[in-house]
Amino acid sequence: MLKVLVAAKRVVDYAAKIRLLPDNSGVDLSTVKMSMNPFCEIAVEEAVKLKEAGKVSEITVMTAGPKQATDVLRTALAMGADKAIHVQVDERTDIHLLPLSVARILRALVLRDKFNLVLLGKQSIDGDNNQTGQILAGLLGWPQATFLNQVTIDNDKIRAVREIDGGLQTLEFAPPAVLTCDLRLNTPRFTAIPAIMKAKKKPIEVLTPESFGINITPDYNTANVEAPAKRKSGVMVENVDQLISKLKNEAKVL
Image 1: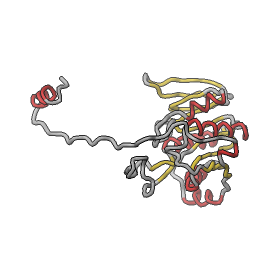
Image 2: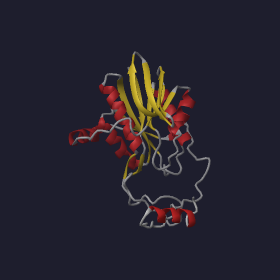
Image 3: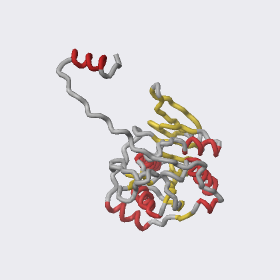
Image 4: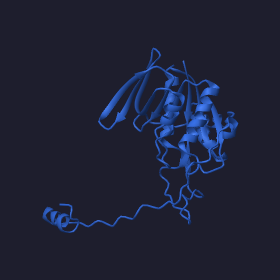
């Protein structure tokens, strides 16, 4: 059976209203709610479902971030993960921890602990880079299926249905492999209080990038962050003729 590594990132909660720092260097994280990246939560759920189906023997969840990122690991353990690894990074993960650095850390863990399947969210909702899974597959030389819509494992074969611009694409390959999870793959389960309490007692292995000889210094710096321009309020029109007139004479799109 497969031994799975799942990557989970701590990000600003998807429902939180964000604001920028006064110097426009990034998002103000001092008062916002933080939680597990939604796509990463889907990846954890899928790993647990595969284990419940008897296709996976062990699930290890990993995060890279500050000490507070432990809450993401506790959530994953409560959902059903067996082990947790916290790679502590003092720098802001939304600015200074690039996908290449995360992929290098994941590769080091794969080689150390002999994982043969890696599940990730397709992207994090802070950087929206959508790169880590693809880079990791390249570093490992493993097959990959991104934007996962459905996955089944039978007779040592992975059948992955992925979302593409034209519809759905089905791939079949043998592990080891890297899979990145899309929104419609599953709905993460609700974690009950007893599971949350048990997760608080489970040990978490703490490492640093330096443990693997990895330098996470970014190759570029964020010069400036700006909020989107405010949209002008719309106007109500009385009929189709007035709408066409405004589109032609004011918006000049007709």
